[in-house]
Length: 221
Image (cartoon, rainbow, N blue to C red; front, side):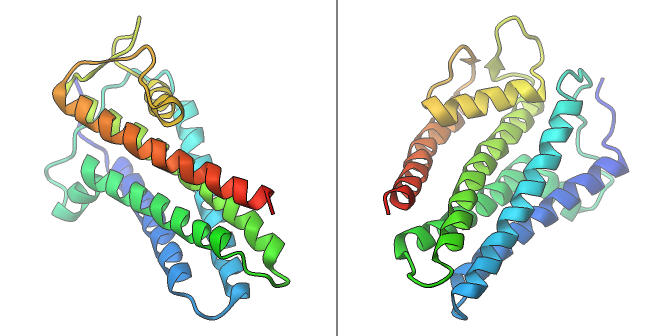
């Protein structure tokens, strides 16, 4: 039976939201910046570093718990409304998607604008890194969303020869959709989950197209 969510877990969720909020703020600051290319480089480098650290720590957490059969812990109703809201699956995914989108937009603006100055090459480099990290961040966010949705209702996805899916299974599912726009060998068993998979597949197509376009523009210069 799932145990009530611990204080440490709630704090971890809050820290994750704060990092995602920081990524959004940095991305928006870049979009609003008018101080010149040198500041653009600093903003993109900061966004890249924070996103890379976020994904690295998240990857370590997934690796450590990849075969953990402990049931998903439900939110503690005794916690504050703010903590429950920030830890909810929809709000959680909204933060991740916003962080990914701002990074993608900021980097794409650099690639399309193609500023010709002494910072040209380094800005292009950080832009391509940002677009790649934003792509990974987007699908990792969907993996977490699928996990929260699955555990909230106890169904929706059926993995071959697997009972309750682990985090690595959900990452496999999300990134399979992200790269092939299909679900491979996983069976989607509920209308709600099918709707989310459909939206994910459509967004993945455009997300991948933007990634390919940006890299193509940079390498074709």
